Length: 284
Length: 294
Image 1 (spheres, rainbow over the protein chains, first blue to last red):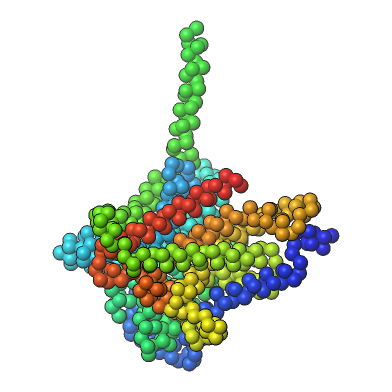
Image 2: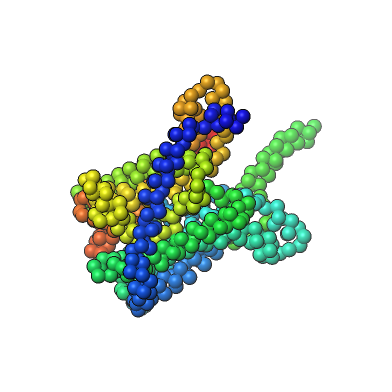
């Protein structure tokens, strides 16, 4: 019976094998090899040179700056994501689909343009440039610009994970808690937050990976001053273009690739461990 | 008598009014609507909308003449054509291979499937600068893939072909992840029915499977396209960045900014945004259309 079922809607074994083979070949060539190349290049001469490259004062400064920018941008977008998801998923209102479209907007804006908008506003020749200069405030080519650009490109990540999850969960549990006399905040902390924690964690991880890895937007507003306004991705570019520092470039790249790798592993662990709670997320 | 006539007249009026009012106000009894919506709107406006509006205001300030002067040069037009043409090519490649990958994952079992499945999200998680130098090393003349391809006379790194390779890399997960849920929901019983009625497997694929997954495939390809058009980090290392050959539009914006040519940068950015928003609008219309069908 199983054979009849298979032959009526499945492909012949030979066709199936060709399709699986082509898929695996494509995935290995386009996705696996680039990842492997980063680590083989970085560790070509063993662990020693990698550690030496990472211990360089300018590289350490770039790691600190990247961590700092992410430490500001990720919490901001986490608060925004929770607030936006609460409004979109728990209430009906006019212009909701417009709001959802606007949340996704940064995804379809080139990172270079995302950085450029802040140069147009706060740069030396920007609208607020002269005023900022007169008051001694530096935004572009300094930390605030880097944080603004990073925050811009990572706006959608947490909200996008939470909206479908909270929509699927509905409002029954919250209404029950409220009817039993819990306050709004108490309901949020003890009912909503535990329900969305794994989706929230995944959204924060993705947001963080993008925040630490952002290149184009930060490149526009950074000014590329080594040891001062260079983030890790910019440091990679600088080292890569410096003929003698190729291995150092791949050492920093391996550290960032590790971040991406951990994000992927965490995602799959969450899906495996909390698959039911995250079911609403599939397809995103 | 009058009162009796008036009643049914007022009745429906009142009820339509209540229904209308209910549709406007939040239907839920939960607190925090004003606070969460207010915060979201203010945050998005300050961080995203107003800065983007600045680009259009500044572009408008150039006037049609200024826009034309900034855009109608061979270098700019070539950069735009390369970004949009390359992204369209990559989206088409991703539609084919992404479709194949999604199909294989949903329908077949094979060793290490979990690991390969996890790998699909890599372009989402790997920083673009890392992807850029990795792809360049891989496809350069002495690279693992570049060396055998060079023997066949195919040069990938530092050519427009390299740009398309990078765009395929970053766009792939959009197609696979959009398609998978639709493919796994597409019920096998319709395929069985078609087979029972005497359809060949090929006829079933073309007439039964393709129409159900086509909207999702187009949505995924459009998302991949939108991402690839504006992509910068994973492309500039492998592109070679030769004027009028392999110089993408985002790089040209970067160059204009470095030259303090704000007019040129703004005009190019505004035209890219208009074109990209057109694609975004098309995606939304497509999704609305497929929801109506489904």
